[in-house]
Length: 151
Image 1 (cartoon, rainbow, N blue to C red):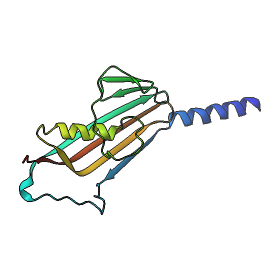
Image 2 (spheres, rainbow, N blue to C red):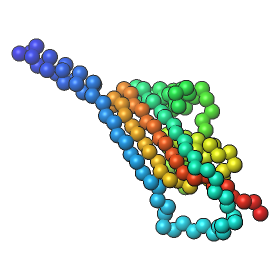
Image 3 (cartoon, helix red, strand yellow):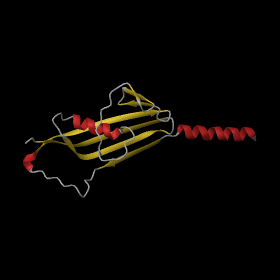
Image 4 (spheres, one colour):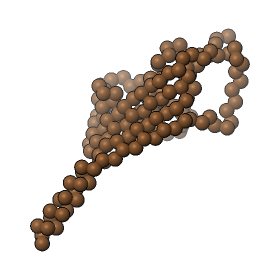
């Protein structure tokens, strides 16, 4: 009887560890209702469509992270690279590190070197992995680059 319970428990643990989870979140950002932009048509120039993607692979509760395939971060603060990001919501009160979405937005902005901002069109977030042991997040940000004209 003990062997049966032990083997059943081992099979249940193996099934939990072998199962993974995945999700895809697609969103189109919506501007808040109180946006007031006092720009005339001659105050800005629309540039090309831009796209930026970033990935983060996390191992062992996120202690070790591989960012964009080559950069390594250990314990969320020891990095072998200079992090490049731009917050999607600069008015957020609390930022707990740099998110994969913030890095994707930075790459979209960097895709048009003359751009001052990117008007969001869509954001796709994908997540997959094995809970507690391995997870992967990927964000893709697309939009139109915008350049403000100087006076």
